[in-house]
Image (cartoon, rainbow, N blue to C red):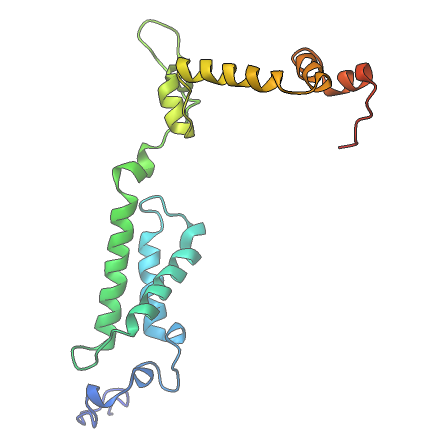
Length: 197
């Protein structure tokens, strides 16, 4: 009995005779519907889940990223140079390798992430939260802020005093009272009506 799927007849076409749309499943021109492309993407994403910090929740996003990469790359495919499936496989494997390389970079290494609320032993002292051991410079760098120098603070205070002196008397009084009272108390004292918030 002869296997219908594999016949011994030579192929009647050469790869250069086919257009890109003909290299996908018969009747399909959409690469996202191609069984081979969908299959290799699902397989590679399945291998990624559980590695480099990827979880099941990342699966759909990774599949979409890989599919977008394949679709972008198919415009560069030349059937005279190689087979489409080999080309797609190379694109997917390179992109996955790049994802793994980027995720495992020292600054993004998910294994090195620690909570600042972890209690650690510090010599003979009692366990202390890690956040208490971080200095102001490290906190500022982590939060993306910069503290003003003593000179900058002095200049700011001086500028504010000069600016406040130029304000009308009622406004100056309001600012002075604001150091000690709430806005509602100041409004009552100065007979102003507060607008509802």
